[in-house]
Length: 539
Image (tube, rainbow, N blue to C red; front, side):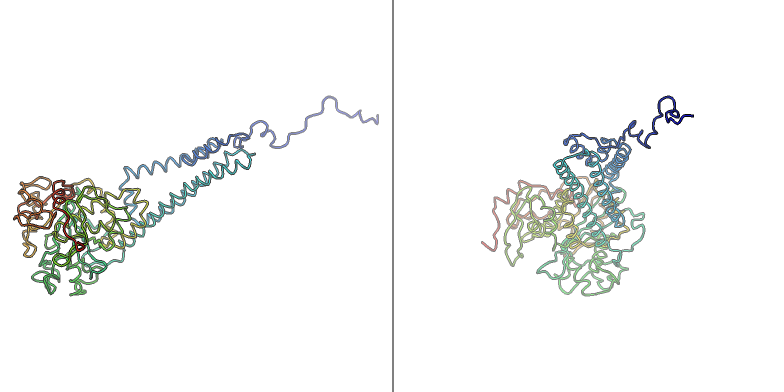
């Protein structure tokens, strides 16, 4: 045998060394998720912006198709849900908005969606950015991402604050622990009721005024099947308000409400003087004045009053200012302050169409009465409410909702229970598209000093039955009303203060369209302007 090492060398080429584990994957199928070495800054910024608008596009562009598709599908579902809530699902959205528990979930869902959206924007940008990017590119991209994140976070924050404010409004206005002598909180408040009757009160309380006088008393009677609504307006100086025979108030006031003197026994004094003269007569209640009025007004009209809503004018101007003002038509000079027979007004609101008013001016427009009648003021207050509704566009509500919610809690009170809110949401959608009629119990129908309550009840029933109290169904023109007197005179021809509207004439149809009194009348307005502004205490 030979000692030469070459003797043992194998014949042929030496075998190849085994491959390094995993190296064949790198050589044969590069990682599709690997960020590219080259992508222009403009392309990165454009795709990042697109990813913020349509989440998932950045992942698709960077090759992460499964993640991109999943995010895109989730976004599509979210958009579809939003479109449904804004269209066919509006009633569901409104129901969610009046439920405190759901509002809590909405706030939480908003936070989760906002955080997830931000994560998608940031990670999408990182997946698009080339690995070897210069510092300036990082700075520019970081600024864009920061702006996009802010664009997502701020709207989410604003919507969240609206949801929180709405929850506070619901909890404060419809408190579960509220007591009422005239409302029983049941799971099905509407039941099989054909009509729901709500007492709408305008309280003229505030600085320099003792207590609250309800100068506006309106009953909204709403048909639950159609939403057709009739507003019955009662004058503030109505006397001898009756009460149901089964009520303890009937025994106290057998001849109608009375509180010492004629001026303190009018309808607008019942809210304040009734509970003051006879506290606790109705048992536990958080608003005895409202219960007094619900019972009395219901008996006067022959209706069962289900709920009340009181708006105190003390905070009314704040509400109008939060909306950015209101726009109304003015057909005659409306006084600012003043006491008839004692003190001239400080000034007047001049006639003119489409007048934009701030909170103070709108309050004077709704409150002014010097030289005019209670019925004139009742008309203007209805017009003011209509103007407020017209100004409440979605963007204004969203921008000012916290202030609006806080103001509403300050000036509005009601005994509507939470259990009835869903039913009221459904009813509101019907009312929105239904006819609204108005019956004003002015001097053409009754004498407030000696009211015929049987006649008032008959007018109410005739209106519901379709007679309209005037020989025609509600919604028809009814018999022709006598020709209105000329501006500046009453029906008898007697002079009235400059530019004031004519006194109602006997025989006019009691049911009329609500918008009629709010329309601009150029003839009446010009007649008032021709007569000139009435005297003020500064003249």
